[in-house]
Image 1 (spheres, one colour):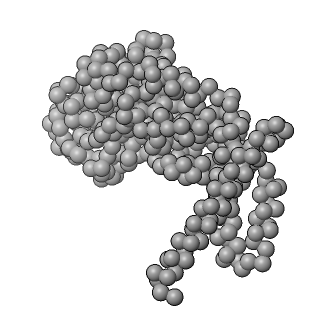
Image 2 (cartoon, helix red, strand yellow; image 1 turned 120 degrees about the vertical axis):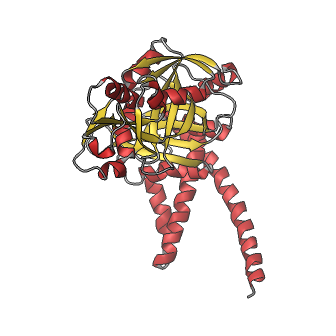
Image 3 (cartoon, helix red, strand yellow; image 1 turned 135 degrees about the vertical axis):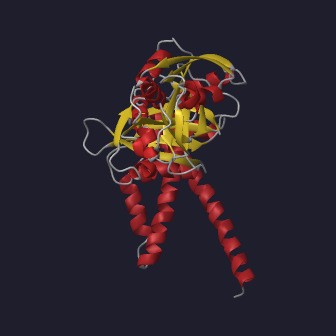
Length: 380
């Protein structure tokens, strides 16, 4: 057969498959109605095993493998359809719809904003990018930023969440698990590090370098070229710059933003010392209440999964079934439970879409831990 002839036959098979698939999904609706009346659970692993055993009987190993994957996808789509018809105890969709109605169309230009560190910190730079006229209150720790927002002292807070070189800011992720706030916007800030000191001395004169652990990690290659130099972590890059400025030592330097050279009257010993020019830190802007602004196309959430085989596959399959793009999937250990994890997910979706709302409602109504962090737009 010629290629065109083969494709025509494939088209005919696809037409029949589509008709049969639509029929199968209609039957799944009837199954959901029956389970609702009887109180049965959606998942029926025994039934699924019986089907797989039957449909692969007599197949060779290769074809049986393809068939297994095909039917597992069918099972997940069927379960998803049934769950959406049985899920009615989640208030999350209504909260999201209410937030969409009450949130102003445009992001505020003025606000009281909590940032970790002091003037010159990267959080401050992110704040100035997000807000046109912010009033910034500085706090020593990430916990202080969250507390200031939770207690109403500040309308918003800025937190670093991950870096393209050094990875996630685990302390912030661990604090996010406590909940109590919503992400309303995020920003990808390009980070360029400089090495600054109180006096203009040769690089070989430096005996100790201070900075935040993220800054140190992002400049690991540069630091490796300075054997024998003591490395000291600080809570914040700008705090470290202030410490150097107040020190009497001329052999002490700091890794921080170039902006700190002007703020703290420090000398620039080296510029662009990060491991890569493609060095970006994602900052999230949090609020005590859920706010969803126009252009929101990214959703962040936390969920836990049952400690059973295939649980993570089934989670990912839900997003695949709806054509949603997972842009982040990260696990964090659950304290007190051996080798069990929470999962932090970011995916691209519009919460105005009913299918997206149904998925969130399904996850919210599950017996596992779930937390919706927000729907927002990410700027760059």
